[in-house]
Image 1 (cartoon, rainbow, N blue to C red):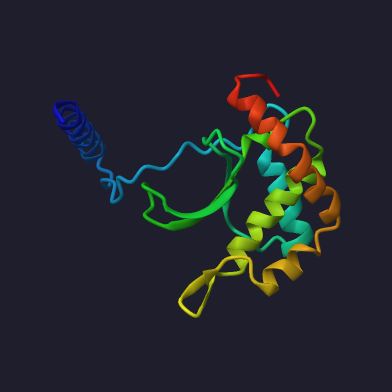
Image 2: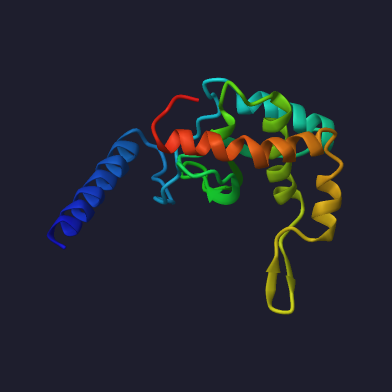
Length: 174
């Protein structure tokens, strides 16, 4: 409890200094102090910005606007979330891709498949049916199967990704 209070006080002092520095420069103070994970699209083997650009151009006519990063989670989950930019205050879509895909044994089509899947979450909103959230509804599944390497990606996702994640948890290099 004592440590939590000390950390909270330290964080508050930090933001007070940030606000003071911005005010001294004549700039607007930050509206949001929410945590945004560092956005790191360049991995060891794959650059997510390049993958996103290719998927966006091929499947969304270049109209999709979002940011992409490698996930900080050790688990195998890739996900989409809404975030607020602390500098501009604007909402943006953030796609986080599992680090299990940033491996020597991961082909480009697998990374592109998961990026395409997460992009669909940006385009197709969650439905509400009978009081339940439907994330992967009929329209979502139909569009997901339009991915040219869908079968190959799903096979890689089910067979190789779990091995990569187990290796990551053991601290082995992918």
